[in-house]
Image (cartoon, rainbow, N blue to C red; front, top):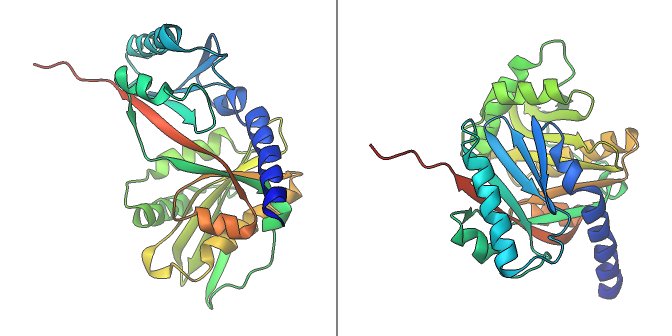
Length: 274
């Protein structure tokens, strides 16, 4: 594919992303959803989440007022301990990150939004000897396997994962979510979710991680291919993922294209000083 053709394809996919994967699509599972101008503000338990299709041309003081109202909105909800304002690299105005920081939010690491045709990823890939793939969410009692998967994710990412949180996610989104693992000798060595976006032809691939001693052997890519095949069987056309520097090259080689970046800006409730 010529660079110009790839650029054209990326622009088309960016339109799919903006149209299908923002605003209401990001509020699935929210306990409350409110609107303020262009913003969608959701609450998910003790966390808040802010998204929008665009900011409607707001700049300067008008944008500052919108940010301040949002901080006040979540600050007055005592169960909420933090909220995320999700920015995208192609959004305007360019000084939005600076304005968010000025209102007490801090930026986390940016990720690359990858998007493309699921059929490009649904290929047969070899696995190392003794490794097999298995879906674990549709069992009568998935908790034991989810506990093993959470432990593997903790090893892969170096941060704690709660099996109870995974089980709750499965329960709440049973018809939309698939949880897959790669196993070797009875041990979970790689994990990944497929999450269908309701009302769209898109699904997300999330939570992919391989434990350190099994990396570089094609297991993550094989698990992506398996989720792509499952997505196609569900009638899904596109797959997307917010990718770290580690996973982006793998997804790019598989056929997904980078269409923009995303940076979470986080507000955290400060405990009063005693």
